[in-house]
Image (cartoon, rainbow, N blue to C red; front, side):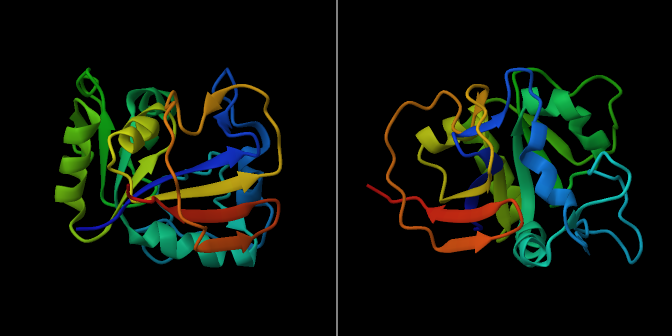
Length: 208
């Protein structure tokens, strides 16, 4: 069974978006380099649906690309909340990494929305992680940070926390850990990679 990793790009003060769900400069590092990031499962010269939203694909610094590409390639399933799904319209049915997406939601898939897309709508984080691990096998389950990520952490289901820290202070907005208000010790970071305008960090969750 693969690891469950909670991940997102985050501001120095712990926000993944502002109050209007705008990411501002958080994702600038995805476009400030000369090394293209290849979407998992894309063929040679084919990046499929352009998740960069800019039409030119992701171009990272060589250091960041060397870190991010194997991370993306290791993902089998993405777990996300309904809020994020609605904001990005489920990436038009094409996961940016992995083969499946599990959406934590009390509402079903929108009627007529990309009927062949490998998306699964599940109520509750426990059931969502169980479904994701079933689909992922020995590959990674990547949980998007935010409210759902915080709930998965609170349930004791996260193995590792991964943060791409951008040098910006938001002051308020959508928190990396959502409304999680407990205390959880992490191990010392086992990955510390300095990219261009981003710091990549990974922490294993310390088990009580």
